[in-house]
Image (cartoon, rainbow, N blue to C red):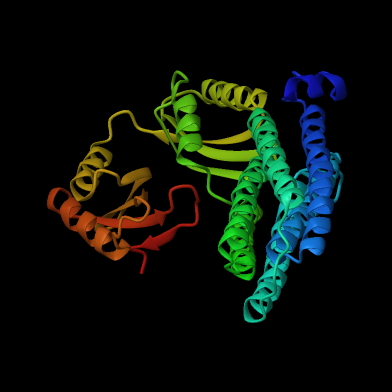
Length: 392
């Protein structure tokens, strides 16, 4: 069904690397979600009013929030299409992320309102009129949401859209909550137990929980989320595949929206390599990444082919922790001492303290080089905001 709709409504639908085609997929998924959720909301609201069921009404409002989410998501895809301009040289792709944040905030507000109404229903319960029509509407809703979940998941994976993958997860959550509402109504009807208010509160709590997760997911790219270990390793392996490259570090990725990523990295090359040869390698790396949609800026670090101090440093840090890495090392010869200046990356969440690592490296290095003094800049794995030791 997804492929048929794509052929009908999207021109050149196989070229998903084209931002216009990607946006068209997003808008098609958004429109499908809006229509589905509006129809489900109308059906559940009517049934909820007639039966007096708070849980069904809560589920109807949940569908209304999903429809509103679809509208905002659709608007986000549309605004993200805008080309770069002098005020926004990196484009407008973050509109998609901003739309996701607004949707998440709206879900939280609705969840709070539903929880309040459900608590009132628990305190003052009333009889719910459950019938065949109610059961059929809820069963149809479950089926529709399963289809919408599969639809959004397939498109989300196809165009690598976190927004649509999140929408698929939301539809899955709706299947669970609607099934829970239907179960509660059946139990209440046949066992004469009033579970309507309780189930409404549970649905509201579920909406709040999902909304909180969506807020976090929407905030991450806006705040500047670190690249995944898989993405970082893929970039690292690609850079190391070029002849003449000895190593790479200080990878930084800036996300300005889907398909609008900029990155920088340091690449180690032999110190005796000619400037022309070095520039050719770096230029090839940058061009190849650009063909894949990543605007990469490379900084070259010259490394001496035989550097006994560097080899000793690497041996020392391996003894402290095999995951520690050092780079950008140079030795400055001063009167009475040799300053060994380098950057050090500690493994994330290792519990290692910078001061302790600094003292260990200094102690071991002085055993072989008594006149040495370490000046270490400690860095995070994917950022270059150094904290220096040894300069005071």
